[in-house]
Image (cartoon, rainbow, N blue to C red; front, top):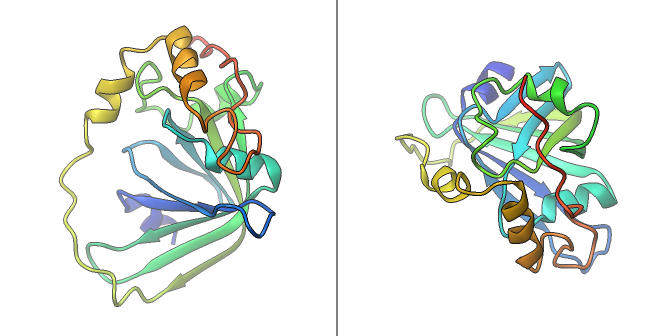
Length: 186
């Protein structure tokens, strides 16, 4: 399953607050080089700038997360990792060690704000017979071109302007602001 998930170009994350009336969040992730298998039960991916911070808020509240990969090419397969996740922020002492798993990512673009670390509790695969064939072309350049022009101060200002970055849709704490500066690259 490790080879399968590492070969996919996109995956999805699902989280939810504890409140049964809260908003379930489902997000696509996929920038090449932004996902890593750390060991047999630990995965990590980079969390980039965006208009919301629902995944971060839900993980800070309860840690529950599911990651899902679908085979859009080759034999049909779906892999789900159910587990516990946590956001590791820029000022965390683990940051530099975790960033070593993402050597192809230029941290000066994309507005990198956290590393999401997931400990798998259950890993399962299913057939995927109904998943359509779709061909990968390339990563979209839009995210990098949008956020590459930001420095730490302007990125922090951007996050402060967004309604659901510091606080989630359901009022949970989201991304801690002010945004700590990116550590210097080694």
